[in-house]
Length: 210
Ligand SMILES: [Zn+2]
View (cartoon, protein in one colour):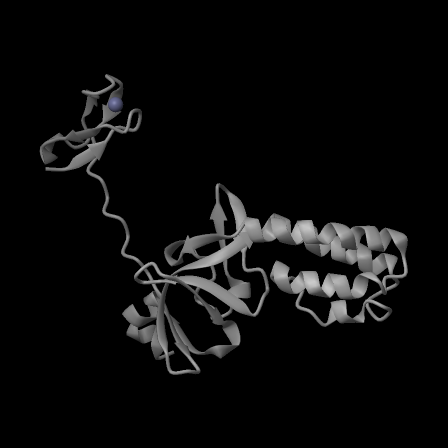
């Protein structure tokens, strides 16, 4: 017999399949509800990843970060670069780093260029950056591969997902944090990936042959 959760109180209601589509009062909270046969959840999709080491991984979820917090850091970086007359001055080490790295990597770079920054306003913005990087780190969350847009591409920079309608993206670091098919969290170097395929491609032979 189908078991249905009341949309008002969450109470479980069992009903005969022939009753599906009928309205009734919830036996728990008395609200008027429509009896529906619940749809089974879609099967878990995986990213099938092969590494240089020969290891094969099935990725069920990937860690992404708030795009808004990443953009805030990018904009502050741009202001620092403008104030300092561009990255070719004392800020050259800054330009050699990926546009956003993990906080631990970024903090060392900030420390290194703080003394070289020629402008007081730029120095002030540089001092604010560690907190902004920490805000990116704190926004980190795992997203199920099923909900990952752009997963047909083997590059995390092409991926995005949503949490409460807010966009989440990869932070641009050389690493990917993920959970495998058993739910265990781990980390890989993105440039160690030598082959990559999604669930859809493995289910659809004609796609592979294209
Ligand atoms: Zn109810």
